[in-house]
Image (tube, rainbow, N blue to C red):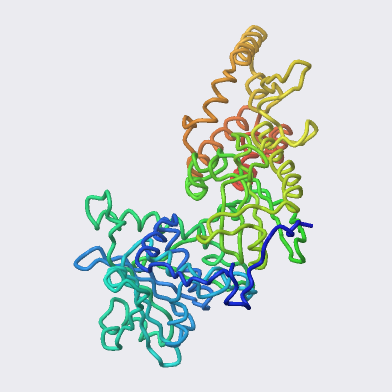
Length: 510
């Protein structure tokens, strides 16, 4: 127990006491505090995402974001949520409108009662919020320039006639309910930019990618979850799935559960396919070759909303061979205090009781990621895949030898006389001895990767190889029949099971 005997408590009951402690009312200077709060660290895209949290909490199903860099530039976010009454809107415009310690609804994405104001004013000098609920239309505005003149916390009430002239207000009236947030006066946004047009244009591209990732589980909901449609200048935002769950080669490990302060934390691990098995579209979804390494780690979701990603929380180092590992962690908003959620809802720290469990999960999933590179699908030496290369563990390391039993080589060996056969074996040995392992490792860890082959080109190449082998060993022969039957277990055909199946069917029917 802490020793508090040395602390002298003030006597507030005796106002005439000699050593009395007096209360001093010291409110912050409105203009100074608001200007300082603009530097909390919001990026443009994180600020918009914070506003979308409010829309989703208000049960919005459609969110329309508009950029207009011309005349009087603005950014508008319109949702079709339940809206707010005039009294509710005034309360929502208060800084610290909700106590973060109060228990929130299970689907509430807010926390501090600051997000809408601090996020907005970090990007603009004038934020206007208009809401329509039960036929009551109301508008409120924080204007930093007006506050600087008045030197007080002056919230502006917007007249109904003025509201109707605001951008997107007509759309709100048509919807019959919802909320419109309008940003104007972009002093910080234009700093260092050639023009407001280029500044907003760049931000719009960044915003699209950010929202597509942060809200991907709302944009592409699973069965039983409510979805949300988001558009930017009438162009729908498409979900970016960091786990590539639609790719058949993605490995989904069993889900695990932990209990923390009486609340459940669910953990789902994924191992992405090797880059050679990713289409150009999948590679783009994964963030490109740079993104594969940069985006490995934990993906923490709070009520399905992505909070933080691309970190192992210092439980393990990021490395090239673990870059295919992704771990989805789902937490509720009841554990915010344990995860040390910040105001921007962009950073978290896992609590100590959970870290040991996460550390064990890391060990399993990173081993799986390494195996994708080390074995390329060869789970054990006794697997049924016919590999092009044999990897053998020896006392001093590993050796790589070309598999002489591969059907392609057997087809080449068959018609050769002894001198040619000996020459071919010597050529293969030269290739094995000169395999540039160091260069291959460096290239795999850098930008010098071979280009990803599109499915159509891969199909043509594999079909040509299969035809050549089958023609050499004999169509209709026992060896030919076995080759067709086992095609899907032979490298490189086994890397593309669907294509291998198509080729096998075609060869069998020829």
